[in-house]
Amino acid sequence: MFAEYFQALALIFIAEMGDKTQILSMAFATKFKIRQILIGVALGAALNHGLAIAFGTLLSRYVPLELLQLVAGVLFLFFAFWSLQAQEAEEEDVKSAYGPVLTVALAFFLGELGDKTQLTALTLSAGAKSPVMVLAGTVSGMVLTSLIGILVGIKLGDKIKELHLKLGAFSVFMFFGLQKIFTSPLTGSWSWLVWIPLLAALAVLSYFRITGFRRALSMIEKTQFQARLEDLRAFAGTLRNEVEMLCKGEVSCSTCIGEACLVGYMKKILDQAAHHVEIDKSGLRNVEQLLDRSYDKQKARGILNMINRFYAEYPESFGGHGHDAFESVRLSIERIVFGAPLGEFDKYQDYKHAIEAKDSSFGLKKL
Image 1 (tube, one colour):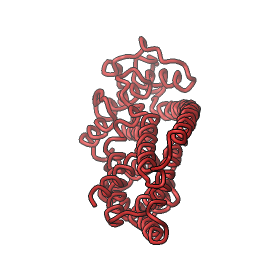
Image 2 (cartoon, one colour):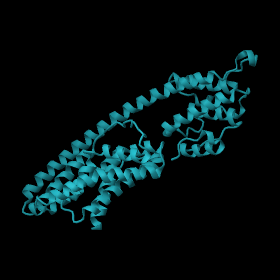
Image 3 (spheres, helix red, strand yellow):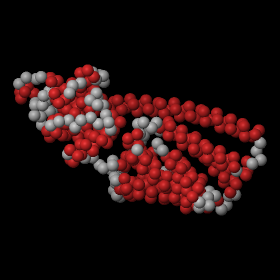
Image 4 (cartoon, one colour):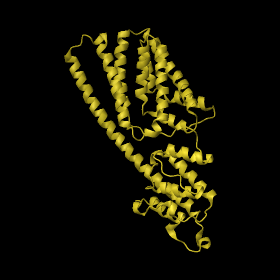
């Protein structure tokens, strides 16, 4: 009984690592609390997988168990190849009119309809001794995957390659598929004259599928990288216009000292970033040594909020240690707002906690 639970949990967990379930969980994490998200995931998955398991249990009453085992093995092989899909991350339109829990539950129920996790639940339930334990295992797998996506994915998402996650899912489904086929009573009489050609064909298909997946993934990553560069350029231009509004002009300053003041320095590096000019690292300066001409703090707070929203969307861009245009602007703006820069941080989450501790009005939604 417990073997069915852990098998279902492991299969769903591996299948959903790096899949849209984790991406959706991370998107919800910017709006709702972890507890609300996990309850919603559990409800949505329970209803989605419950329907599949009910059908699978009913099917086992009319189809011989031996045939179901063989079909399950073939389906797992199909799921293995299905796992190797290179897809662009989709923006989820999150509607919260029904409350956080129901919103998440509805999103996961609809998002998993016809997906491999629902079909995996159906396959596992066909012939299972305890369909309830299978359901508990699949729901636990979905909840655990979502929790990992929230707590770990944000910090390590750029370090754990999608290729490795998908290949892991491919390997697990392939193993369970072959195991069910090899142990099926219907294949017990097959000789190696049958097995060798089948395994060879499977190996060739796997090679071409993996090669094609890697090529498609590379193309998507290249496209996304180019799109991100364009977003960065546009943001630099917007930020440059906002910083310009901080400039007091020669009427107030009498003499412009250029990049020796905080605003002049920010305008220079943002001009370079907006025009795709590589930032001159040797020209980066210690912002604490630049002249502060008592700029408008309210406008500066607005710019700092813009930078915070940018880093919330692109947390992987954080941590330039002063060698990045936006990082230098952040440090400069913090000096205007707080009197001194908050310093350097390795991860955006660390910075988020630091700025919230300094001034709670800068707080974003709690993770």
